[in-house]
Every structure is written in structure tokens, then in C-alpha cells.
Length: 508
Image 1 (tube, helix red, strand yellow):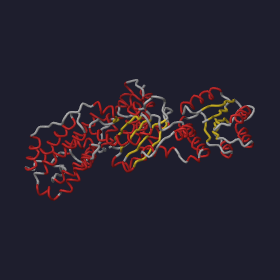
Image 2: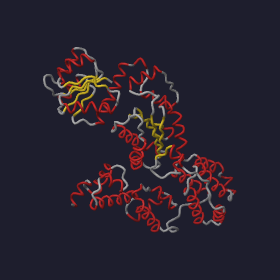
Image 3: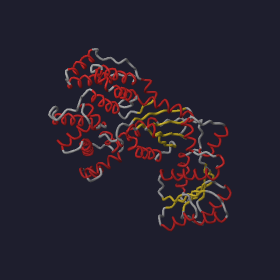
Image 4: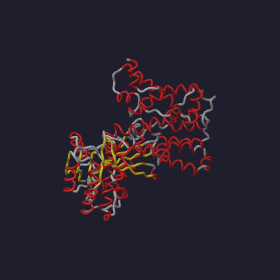
């Protein structure tokens, strides 16, 4: 995009040239002027795609220059900058047909969005005959239906500053059964990430049928992968702001055109979530580094579980499952082997109950299919509860397991893991009770919900670090289990009534 900047402050002109190039190296500043009269002459000569103009300038102000350009029928897009927010300026500028009215000091996210609007408008007006848009380009790459050629790549580069033959990266966010409730919020978070960077452009797509969002990173700085940034900042931020399950997968591509093949491979890699810790960004390199070993558990474990089931000794049955889970995760295994061994173990138990096996054969097959297709331990836990019901297992009543003992164990886990994103689901699984039962007993005995208790531990840790250290807010946030310092400050103010910086000053 060819651009002329008309601004009387030299440091703003210089900074804008640098920022424009960072946002898109294809942006070309073909003229600069410090007043409207010179700007008018340059614009008439260069006929740029876009004019960025200030309101108040010597010799000829911005609005006068715009009116004169309209009279001369000079067609171009216009962004107006001003330190003045009075309605009359904005109204007159809008009436003159500008694209956007931006106030100083300029905010990168707003400027970037305004430039994108300008690009889209220019392309709609200049290249309607080509019949393709950014949305269609990305959709074609994902579906594998796009074929590139020299003409197509030339037009794409002229319109958008990239081609489908250039490197790109994919970031997949799988939300499972929580997709309907969380996809809008997840998309907002990803859009926020894209809006506040000049290192890449992004296209975010929803894939409802697959329960996931896909972020396509393109027009990146040469040879620079964003994986480390997403590992350190974006994935923890998503996991802190969304309910589980949240699975993130990454893929770097030699060409954007390879997106369809890459996406199919990434979907297969989702099940590796069973083998990695929470808040982990799954990618091919880390998968290939795994030293896979066969799953081994004592041969008599199945026999002990079957014997306990015949004796209706549910405590021992649960203990056998806990030991099995331990063997499944203690060393690197193929995710398919983890699921196969769990299905085999379940099959050995249901085989001891021939009548139930015959009555519930379809249900059992459905449960085993769910386990085979699972990507997360949350899915497996939910499916296992269905299976346990077939075996006639029910959650322990309060008299069978002391609520006090249960809650004390939960509180111990919170104290140990509050800064690592411990959730109600994980805690219930470790204690082998349902989320509903643990939540009810926890609230009944402590007067607070599980989430409120985790939040309280985090806030107390923040207070301690504010008073006893000189750490920066981002460091304190990380130590207290928050990936976003701004979110930490928001929660802190809700709980304490003041911002962390105010709290620290008050304790000096």
C-alpha cells in the first residue's frame, strides 16, 4: 500500500514510517509533508492509496486539504489523526468520507485495525474483478481446494502483502464439550493477541464440528517463529481464562498452501495431550523427542481388581484403578497404548459379570469407543464414570467417606498446587469422587467454593510477594499462578479493594 503522511511533528512522522513498516513491510511511504499545502501537492503528484493526515497544521490544516482533494476528485483513502477530540472535528472529517478518526497518542491496536480496514476497502474497490478475499484464501488453504499459480500469487501479494507459497504457522485450540460455551471468549482472547503485535498477521477461524479454533499466522518477519511466544505467554493465558479441557497444538509450515495436510496431522496429535502436563503446547518436535517405552503393570493387577469386584470390595477396585493410572502416566507411552490398556483392563473386569456384559453390550462398546477417541483425561474420567455405573459402583455416601477427610485432602492439594492451575476436575479425579460431590462437600464444610479457595491462596501469595520482595508485577503474577499481570491486578482489586501497586505503597 502506497502512503503519504501529512503531519507537522517530525518525530511523529518518523515513528509512523517505522511502525508502518513493522506492521507490513509492503507498506511504502511515498511522501511526507509538514503542512497541508505541501501535502496536497505531493498527493496530487503521487496519487497514493492512503493519506494519513493531522488536523491542526500551519499554512493549510488537514480538513481544508481534504476538502481541496475532494474538489480536485483525487481518489484515495484517508486516516485522520488529531490530539483534539471535539465532536465538530470528528463530524466534519466523517462527512468528508474518511476511513477512520484516530486520537493521539496513537495506539498500535487501533492503528493496525484502521490500516486493515483501509486495505480491505482498497481491495474491494480496485480488485473486484479478481473475485477472491482473504477469507476465501485461508478457507481454500484449510480445505485443500486452493491451487496457486503465478497470476494468483502476484495478485495476492499486491493485495495483501503475502502469498500462499510463503511460510506460515498454525495454532490450534481444542475446547472439547466446552466449545459452545467458551468459543466466543477464546476467540476474543486470540483476537486480542493478534491486535497487539506487529510481528505477524493472523486469521482466526472457528471449526465448530471439530470443537476447535484455528489461528493462522502469516506475513511474519523472515525466518522468525512465534512458537516460543505462544508457549510462554499465549497458552498459559488461555488456560487461565478458560475452563478445561483446553488443548493447544502448534505447527510450522514451509508454505501456507500446506495448511490442509498440517491440520489433519495436528488433529491426530491432539491425543498426545494425555502424555504431556497441563498448559503444554503440543508440537511435532517435542513428540519426536519422546523416548517411548511399552506400558508395563503387574500381571496380577487385573486379577486383584476382578477378585475385589466379585467380593463387592469397591475400595480395593478403586485402589487398583489408581495404581493402573499411575502406570499409564509414569513413563512416556504412545497415547494409543494408554487407551488400549485402559480398555483391556475394563474389559477384563466386565467379563467377570456375564449378565451385565450381555445386557449392556452396546453401552460398553460405546464407552470403549469414547475412550479410544479421547484427547483428554477429562474425557476419559467422564467415560470411566459411565463404565463404573455398569459395574454398579456409586459415589461414596458421606458416611462411607468422611467429608472432613475428603475436604482436608482437597485443601492439601490446593495448598500444594494453587500456583500451577489446579482445578476442581483434577482434584476430584485424584480423590476418585465426582466433581459435584466434592464441590458440595467443600462448600458445606468450608463455606467457600473450590475456586474461591484457590483464588484466596493466590491473593495471599501476591500480598506476601508485594510486601517482602521487590519483584515486578509480571514476576509476582507468574509465582502466584497468573499468566497475565493485568488479570492478576483485576482479581486483586476485586478481593482486596485496591491495586497491587497501591497495596505495596501502603505497606512501605
